[in-house]
Length: 220
Image 1: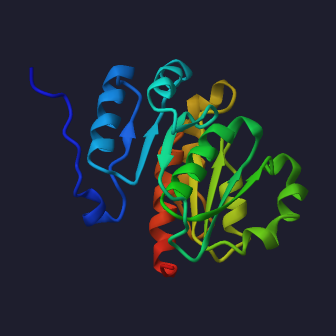
Image 2 (image 1 turned 120 degrees about the vertical axis):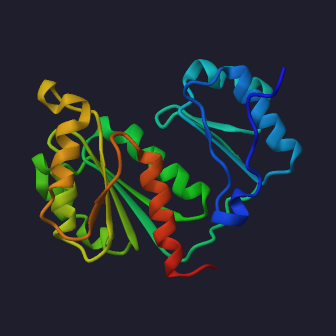
């Protein structure tokens, strides 16, 4: 039987970042085989996204050197967590319910060698909480904003900073949120300049893009 995977070991040479394993839709045994193959090829870091707790429990027995973040559903190991970029990526989430998506952005940004600052629970329903953090937010080179409900936080942040803002709509909200669609449309229609948008719940994509932008600030 032919193997079901073929790792792209040249990806880091081409793009600066290694291939990431997407855990959803793969069995725990398939993930195990892929990780084992990457370790045998002497990778200096392995990142698996969207890993549920059952798969993580199985994989931790096989690879105890890895760490698992239950909120972000990330299974990760890295030989060295040294920073490679000079600038900071600030990840902001509107509410505690948005933490899983926001932490996915934090973890991929850290994995790729960036310093991160995580600011939680500063949604527009209590706008003073955000305003108290503006100076801290503006110290970053790139800002990621994760928000559900109506997704207004990204526009507000975009109007308070001259830094690029990457908006992540989350599927958090009541019925008319349509599993993140209302937040997505609000962010796409933002009147604040400098706001770009990734897909619903795509914290990984936002953190990766933030890394790509932060690379422009210079390498260590």
